[in-house]
Length: 151
Image (cartoon, rainbow, N blue to C red):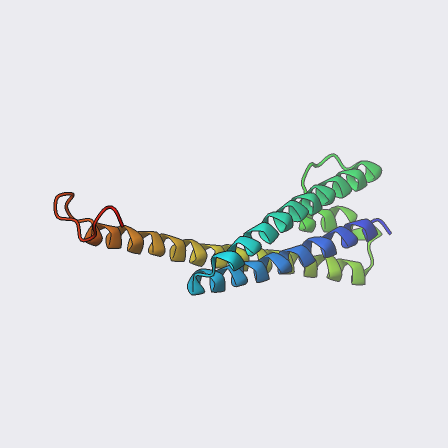
């Protein structure tokens, strides 16, 4: 079965994307609660997940390239839908259904991760703006400081 290796790679990619989605939700909670220690842990875990996803994606591209060469398909298209089209006669219905399911699932997870990251960026920017405004209130004028600079 030509798609077995691809299915394994797609499962790893899907699993890591699910972990990254949970990570972005955890990051949002840490931002809201202003838990810097937790946020640091989450960012470190996020970096590892991003590296794993990058590696999964490279594996996916290599697997499709190898299968295309074996079938002598010249196209350098890496979409799963094109892979299914090129290998339709070599794949059973169950495998086609699994591949389409992974494609749909990966798109949904990617969208959800992007949405959560946009929300997190909004929270970060809002916090920065709040701090900037607060500092403007506290240090309105250099000659009329609210606090003694020695403090």
